[in-house]
Length: 166
Image (cartoon, rainbow, N blue to C red; front, side):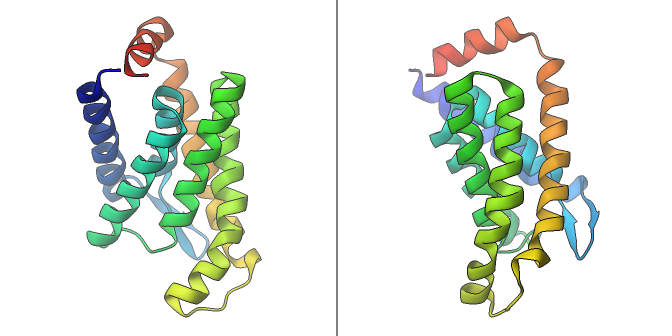
């Protein structure tokens, strides 16, 4: 494994996810949807696997919070989505399965995890149904964006690079 290439790829994905949050977002009910975060989660899961994908999701969430572009709820949703996308991709080797993992991980499990997270760290007492719609809208739009990007890339070159990283 070429550690320098892995770290450089991770840094690039963190930069894309952080900057993308500033420029590409839209209202999703009571919250804002940041589809680039979810697209990066899926791409990282496909290219690098579940471990690096979770680290990338954490770093993007951290930077977005430091820069005032996100909330603390970015942590559980993004990290769970990246983990599930990576694990499902590892098992099935299909990009659409990674996208489904992102939607289930962030849109459903992450939304449910946001309830106690919001209560403990933010002092709010919203129910699970409060978080589900915006989390789902954001993760579905990002997963679709990732699938669009993946279908436009030359698979042979990407997966040759991927094998060198692993």
